[in-house]
Image (cartoon, rainbow, N blue to C red; front, side, top):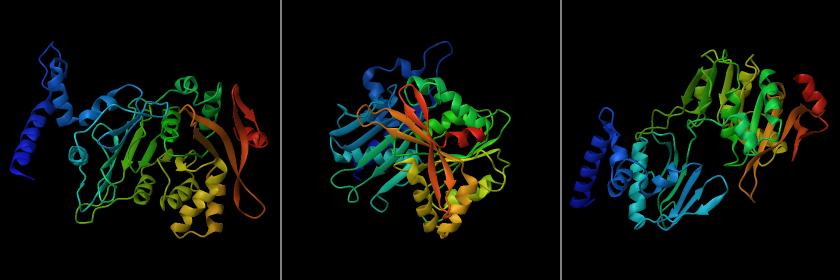
Amino acid sequence: MTAPEHLLDRVRDRIAEEWSRDPAPTGGAGPADRLPPAVGDLRDDLLGAGPLQPLLSAPGTTDVLVNGPSEVWVDRGRGLERAAVRFPDTAALRRLAQRLACAAGRRLDDARPWVDARLPDGTRLHAVLPPIAVGSPHLSLRVVRHRPFTPAELVASDTLPPGGEHLLRALLDARLSFLISGGTGSGKSTLLSCLLGLVDPRERIVLVEDSAELRPAHPHVVRLETRPANQEGVGRVGTTELVRQALRMRPDRLVVGEVRGAEVLDLLAAMNTGHEGGCGTVHANAADAVPARLEALAAAAGMPRSALHSQLAAAVDLVLHLRRDPSDGRRRVTGIHLLERGPDGLVRTAPALRRAPDGFVREAAWPRLEARL
């Protein structure tokens, strides 16, 4: 870094420190309300996400993706759209990525050219630098909604079909254990946050997440978040350890934000030791692919296939599957499947409800699901 760049960074840090205090005079508007546009842009560059800040702050934005200085995309709930935002060059984009990583307390440089972190405002940050990323730094920013959707809002947005909210309340009241499956960006965390808000207020919910995204509207929530290793490679706390700690915190509902590794063993074990009503999310292309997905995760953790299916059959009752429609970008619950063990000892999914324009349509496994409600 040259001397002028070093001096500029010191000036930026000093101004950011002053503005972060945001002293507002009594009875007057705050500093942000009094700033002229040019100063507001400077404030975004120092404290926010620079030219990306207006996109992130806009109502309805879920994701902002940057593939290069002139390739910025935004998702406002209708799929990705090209944005008019531009960066002067790749160096400016790199500086923004490094500043955001620093704000999250993470390292991003040539020695460690990627970062996956949560920003102070809750935004999920993923950044990759060259040479891992070809040609330019790449940024992926996911906006976390500070207020979860209500069931009525999910029906209005077509995520749930008409009447779907009543069925989901019944599933929670029956304390059935479930997994929400779907692809990346299909709305798994959004649906789970909404459902957890419907849990009885007298129950204690313990959340375990790799990056804290779930924000249920519930009065008794304990949130645990993983921690990466420091620059010396020590101090890492993974999901598996957090699940074990959560079991000692008297949870009425144990929730794993995303099952994607060895923590599947601890989650299934917990659900088999009296912790009814547990839940989590898992990446899968379809509901009937969930057993195979969990089988692969368990195999990587050293659990035999037969043991995994035995645990799964006893621990998880059903799967709710979400799919994002490629034509309009809307996220929709496509069906609810029971998990049942076959004669060969393997767990399979049995469709109980299928989405239709006017609501859920009953499938072959519906009588068995109805009996559990």
